Image 1 (tube, rainbow, N blue to C red):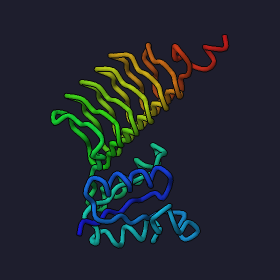
Image 2 (image 1 turned 90 degrees about the vertical axis):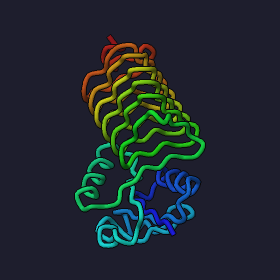
Image 3 (image 1 turned 30 degrees about the vertical axis):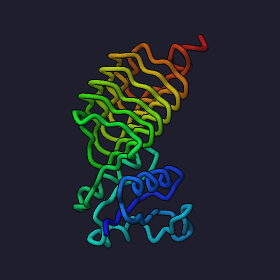
Image 4 (image 1 turned 135 degrees about the horizontal axis):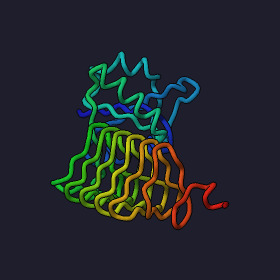
Length: 210
């Protein structure tokens, strides 16, 4: 039996669990640092915290961090990697991933998402429901491409970058590390590190007000 441990009992965690079971995992077990106050996540019980998972790593054939927050997800992913956890990637069977794309460990690709040829996707990345990552894109570690967001070809997103629900990014753009693109934004200019842009065209909030 192939058993998968998920660290992070949230709504996002439920979607990851559902994708994992659909893709062939036999069982999913949740861990969360809010345990024991958080004892259940939808259909699944929460059986311990991060320390409990570390102690039980040999029981699982796969481990994945199912936390939406990019910085926290990356921190937990690194801790598990350092501990020798059997980190895995989960791709929903209703997603389309080119055989010529590369996905890093700890990455999840949800139903309806597309990752096209020569895309390079880092570790602990979320390509969420219905999102598209076109040819030659490069996604750094711990990036989140939110539901329905679309990256044209040759887009680069730095580590910890966040592209919001329904956003669109023009080909060749660079989105910096820890940068955030607001929901529905249209990115036609590069986004600096650690900045947030919103609107159509996407700009810094202060620039839109001036």
